Length: 355
Image (cartoon, rainbow, N blue to C red; front, side, top):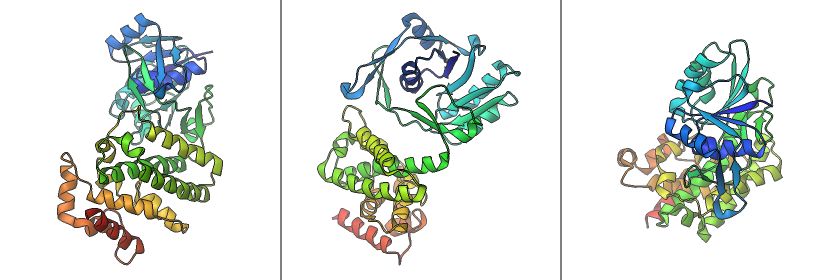
């Protein structure tokens, strides 16, 4: 069985992707530009992935080799999993172009929540024979002691099946999915929308710690209601099985409510001017709920709190608030106009929050 190359041996590369490969019994080749990290991996020969809350036994990752780009060889590799940060994808593509055998075909999955990661990597790799897919990474990982990683127990890596041209990776938990664009919308309307409910309503209640807000009884009740109505409309719009969508939503709730994952309101609430756009994670699912006649009250409250949100570092947002006011933000950024019932509902929630 061929090795699987993991390009980028950081938190996600070794702690999530490396763990999935170890669980599948695959031999791993870690490639990283950090010579110190490569030497540490070689010397240690293994590391452990621990799970938040100790909800399962740690996984030991030990069937691997490690090298820098100068030493990299892909002679016994067909599948490459890339986890380097979006800003480094072009450099990775150029490095692959210099090292891949032009007489062989390779398959890569870019595990980066970046803009057009597959296209960037493909363009940079040039003429080499490479099919590049892109994945959605849901798993939170943080550095532990030494090379060890602390990780969420997220079970799989979904990727775009269409970009793999029929190739199916021989790793059970790497899941090529058809209609990947729909899946990204599903993720935006489930995960990202729920994160906004917690972050902005948590800020409105005075929380700074994200886990505290996620476990607030009132916020949890609103979150559960929004999951319920959102699950229904996503199944109707995209044809997902109700049980599958419910499990998908529960994975997000488990992640957000886990107090062992250290996070802040400020990190999750940043850039409200982006998150309030008409096609984004608050207004997008709100419009879908309206389409099917479902209750939009939780996302209306969330939009109101986001419009009022302020933090010392949000200087660009403060300028927009000053220039446009709440009504201008609703019209120009959210695409919601006077005369729509939802416009008046959000304005009413804004006044309630101000008081």
